[in-house]
Image (cartoon, rainbow, N blue to C red):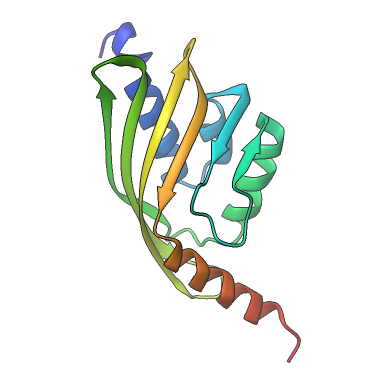
Length: 145
């Protein structure tokens, strides 16, 4: 792969997603700009938008604490947009388990903006039902008996 290919928006997003598949928060954030923003238009029970690298890092650190090492991306494809060289569409799927044993499986679609070699904005759509089930299982596990 040439240097230009390694620094393409497509390659940058693929590296970030591969790190996510390993639950490697630092690897994900190596690809993100300091003013990075992530948007979850369909997120149940959580923030719809998180801005700033440190705030987003804290958010993802909390999320990954609830996943087991069985978590992985089972599908990953990143497509450039023909009319906008700074944007790509990423489609991916995840499968694994929460720390309480609850299975987790979901599919995602993200519109990602990359500028100056760093991810600036990530708008992520996913099926909210698996997230709602996982949140309910975690809340039930944390309630005193």
